[in-house]
Image (cartoon, rainbow, N blue to C red; front, top):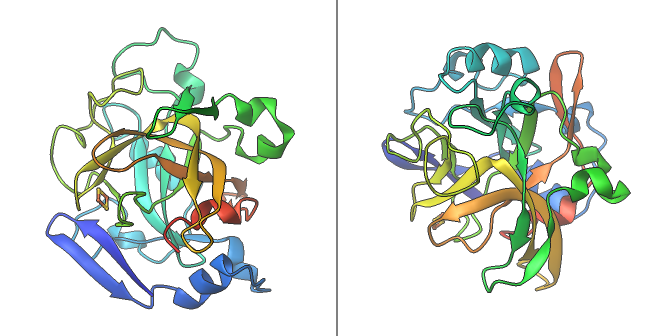
Length: 253
Ligand code: FES
């Protein structure tokens, strides 16, 4: 099992990145480890990220809130690992901004219709509050956890690891490709807006079976669709993932 994290310097390929957990997870094998729910920071080697000093430590809600206060947009995000899966945890000041006028640099989560790359309607991001099956994804604690593998060719998109217009610390409403604070895949420049929740469709790479999922929106580049969410809880201050939707993380398996 090898995974590639994007860094400012290019790609770092990592061998055995929690591969036992990753493999057992995707193959549906249960594990009894107490740490299954933990999400730990993963600071891409050679990068200068705000969580360098916390590399390998469990993610805490407070660390994201504190880092967001250093941002012009009030957002923060970090790469991490959950049972060997690459994730990006993203903090958005949703509670503070959701009732304000929808203007530049006042980010909040938005809910949109999702369409496949061929234009077929799949569903609405509002289903996280409308359908019981997605209830664990209802927005809470100003955060979402994203399974971070690019549906194009399975590289691992990053948060502000390279400097360009897509990664700048600004935010435009509407889920367009304009503005910054996108998750950016350095392999072929796919972009994702972590503030737009939609329902879309992908395919299990092993079985070929299609599945619908709730995730963030792809806004540009060659990726066909966006990336799925991982439900979580904040336990004390620790961010802990929930294994409700394992099938959604199989498009690169
Ligand atoms: S693998 Fe991400 S854009 Fe190609």
